[in-house]
Image (tube, rainbow, N blue to C red):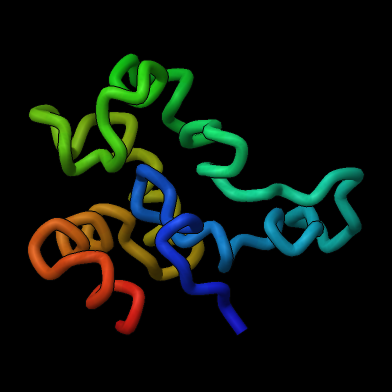
Length: 108
C-alpha cells in the first residue's frame, strides 16, 4: 500500500511513498545499498529538480506550483517521463494540490 502523508509529497508533486527507491529497490529490481527517505527527509529538497532550480535549492518555495515559472522546462521534462512510464502527471498533481488542497490530494 502506498504511503500517504504530506511529508512524502515532493516539491515536483510526486508521492515519494510510491517510488521503488523509497522501498529500497532499483529500476532493475535489485536491492539498493541505501533506501531513499523521500525528497523532504532531513530537509533535503527535490532530488531531481533541486540541482536545476535555485528557488528549491534555497528553500524559497515548497512546491513547484508556487513559482512564477510553473511549470518550468525541467518540470515539464520530468512530467513527460512520469506520464510515459507511470501514467502519472506531476503537473496535474501540483495543480490539484494548489486548487483543492493537500488533504484532498492525499485522499484522492
